[in-house]
Image 1 (cartoon, helix red, strand yellow):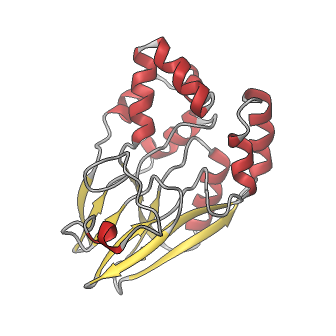
Image 2: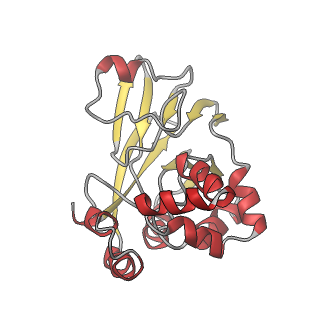
Image 3: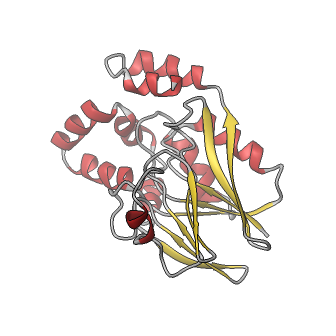
Length: 231
């Protein structure tokens, strides 16, 4: 049985659709999403509609879902976070229905799953914090202390993909679908074959120029939202 691991979609429907098209080629039976469905970009309703209504998906929330709750609670939060991250939260406010927001905000912060007899821990940043970054060049001590008790431990958040293995267990970061920070023009996700413990990272082309053009109109002062795709 093969499962796909995604993270950090960030309301980028173009990258998300490209990854889903690629997933269809690999006989995937389950899709796990390690948080940050929204934030930064401009199509949260389309992303959430897919995740809400397709039985393949199991999702948790990331730090950007938590930020959105703050933004909808206080206007000052909306203004401050929008200056840093762009207009993505404003688009969430405009586009997301009450049902979509309820679904999003009621996602768990982490999950322990058993799929095909294998234990999987799904978090966003680290074992104890959605805001903690574990990069590929983290110390071995930092990596080892963030292994869960399950065979597969999964985090996102850094937007950098990597696979680490220790004592027949795996720590996996699938990278980012919507805002990859290693190779900006390639959406990143992971596949786990639970039958033989083979873990792979997949990189998928997407039409980032459409996002760049949109960001130049909507967030013309936030160069990061555009330049990140050129890494």
